[in-house]
Length: 614
Image (tube, rainbow, N blue to C red; front, side):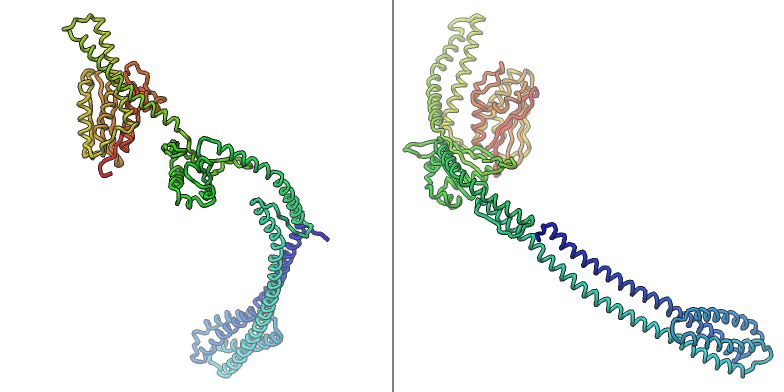
């Protein structure tokens, strides 16, 4: 007969429940029996002992009267003795009657009747003694003492009879308890054995097929589809095994059909990646495998067989791979674009930008973003580099060529302004002034273009040294003082006390501060203030220039340091190169420069430089 897994589990659990119920019923039966017997002992014999003890006490109190009278007969105390006799005699009768009504043992009734008869005789003698008011009859006293001794002896026999009975019942109760203990132990051992049998065989019967199924599923996850489960039962586990075997057979067929398509697609993808004009190196998320396209391998000098090794072993032989692993760690902390790098390839120097990209993909089932690894993209910018060099050369050439006609034009303007040659009318004077301003603007542009070209060509070098902050501020202030005076602009200079010196190029830093002050004067209204603040914070010295002009719109803040960018303000005669040069100078000295302001609240430029001994 074939049973389902549910039926087998129910049957096993039913056995366990039956064992527990059997143990419980047996325990309750014997416990109830022990309780009944113990109650019997307490109810009967213990009360008999209590009554016997009370009779002995009251009898002793009665006999004390005889002892006192025997020693010294006091006629004046007779009434008190009569009262004692009445109370104690009455109490003795009560407990004697209770003992008579609580007969539990064989021979107990005869003893009680005997005690009753003796007590009546003893009571009569004691009454006769108390009635006699003249003298004490010692013969009666002796009779009373003899009867008293017999009463005590019989009461003691009654006490002993009930004590022995209690002892026998206790022994019987103890024996019953031992029997219960043995029975419950046997039943408990049997129950434990049955439970162990069920606990050992039932879980194995259920879990072993599930373990085998789990192992097979993990093998399928590793693309091993040659898996089958052999289970000969016809329950739910057997049905699951059959379904699993059918699934693995279908997966094998599906794998064989799609393997060729996957290989073709892989080759196509590799061909596309290898055809790119960019070198690509890929590092998996666990940093255990390194891949690269043909261009990247040619640039680095990698052998294709080397890719089978662990990336750390490859990094030991190739400095570029070691730098790549370092760049990946830096990228995890703060993503950034890496600088341009040069490679000798095909007998020519080629330039490539380095950029780390996070590679992610969506899980086909959960659709959650999964991390695949990191890719280093080497983009060929050789053509742009050549164009940039050509542009720099052109700027240098045109700057030199323009310096001569500009100088000649300035000289001509000076001659026109000389009244010895001739006096100009108002319109001519204004025209000459406009020409002079345009020539000065062209001269500044040519000077800044030449400076940028020299900087990009590496012809301008930094002279880094320890420079006094006060010296830089004083130089810049004196340079622009006259220009500010013409617009009635007042400078407010605040330098933090005990400000440390900075490590910088004094000339380039002063040029940056002068440039910022010129811009502030240009955009500030008449009769306004310009603040120059210097303070130290986190091993850096901060220079701040704040004007009371209109300010710069927030959407232009990211472009303000770009070359040739201007705000379009009518007051501006800027070439759009000053801030770009200032940015290059400050960053080359390991500092930063940025705009910190709100529109319509003036303009604040701040740059930082490292302090001495930072």
